[in-house]
Amino acid sequence: MGYLPGIVQLLILQCWCLLIITAMPLDFKGNICSNSNDCNDNTTYIWHQIHNKITELASGARHLFEKYTEVQGLSDKVDQICDPVIVHFPKFNATNSSEKEKAIELFSIFSYVSTALSNITNLQNKISSKKTPLLNELEKTFSGVKGILSNLSCFLCKKYHVTHVSVHYGPPLPSGKLPQKAHGCKVLKKYKHFIHQAVNATIINQLYESGTQNPSVP
Ligand SMILES: *[C@@H]1O[C@H](CO)[C@@H](O)[C@H](O)[C@H]1NC(C)=O
Ligand SMILES: *[C@@H]1O[C@H](CO)[C@@H](O)[C@H](O)[C@H]1NC(C)=O
Ligand SMILES: *[C@@H]1O[C@H](CO)[C@@H](O)[C@H](O)[C@H]1NC(C)=O
Ligand SMILES: *[C@@H]1O[C@H](CO)[C@@H](O)[C@H](O)[C@H]1NC(C)=O
Ligand SMILES: *[C@@H]1O[C@H](CO)[C@@H](O)[C@H](O)[C@H]1NC(C)=O
Ligand SMILES: *[C@@H]1O[C@H](CO)[C@@H](O)[C@H](O)[C@H]1NC(C)=O
Image 1 (tube, rainbow, N blue to C red):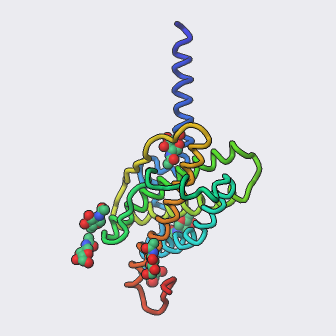
Image 2: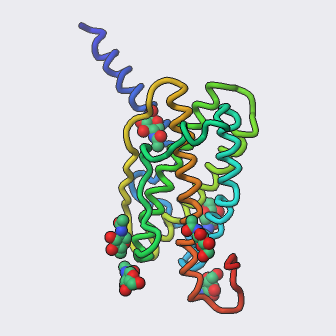
Image 3: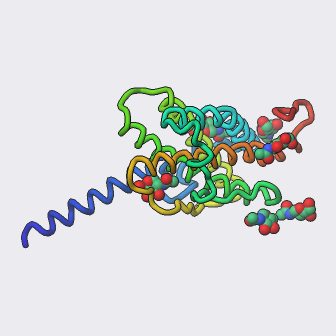
């Protein structure tokens, strides 16, 4: 029986590795304020940056989705295979919630998205070890999302003293490459819709800024 503790340890270690990989996107050590020393004090300015980065991501979201479906060979079956109705994606109350509620929802959704993106990236890396244009797009989006999460954590911490946001990651991934490809497609489709909503939802707060400039309102 002497070897049992070793096996248990190994199992625990493996679980840890899984946890670390899935939690990798951004580590707040359970506390949103853990990096707040590096935060800008001007929360209006932070919010601007959040909006600008979301706008930037939104401009690439369609391209990411199309690259994804193209690479998977799903282009002409998008409607059947990528119908997003049944995939988990956190709800975004875009229209009529307070700034604080919005920021909390955005934090939760972007946390979910960063995990989903790293899952999708992992799968792509398994399928092809080459540095594909799709992987480039995924990486670009992922680093944008990380930046937004970092800015949102500053915003929530500094302005509203929020230290924790719970994230619902949904059911585990389906097993098998094909269902996982389809899952990625659904998530990216939902993401594409969400990110455009998010552009509009973060714009409001720019209105009570000085009237000298009118960024991104057409
Ligand atoms: C905070 O940032 C906003 C937007 O960039 C700017 O208009 C404002 O002057 C800044 N406030 C302070 C106190 O620096
Ligand atoms: C937003 O986050 C990025 C990445 O962490 C950082 O470089 C930038 O300074 C942040 N902006 C503000 C206004 O805090
Ligand atoms: C959205 O927010 C408003 C205001 O807080 C609330 O009344 C409404 O029920 C929310 N809708 C959803 C779907 O959560
Ligand atoms: C929701 O919208 C209604 C009418 O437009 C407004 O009276 C109400 O204050 C809003 N609620 C929130 C939480 O913003
Ligand atoms: C990412 O993958 C892990 C491990 O399979 C899974 O538990 C988690 O639900 C997935 N999350 C998303 C958002 O796809
Ligand atoms: C964002 O706002 C623009 C202009 O008001 C509108 O045309 C567009 O449909 C909105 N997009 C979303 C996703 O709500």
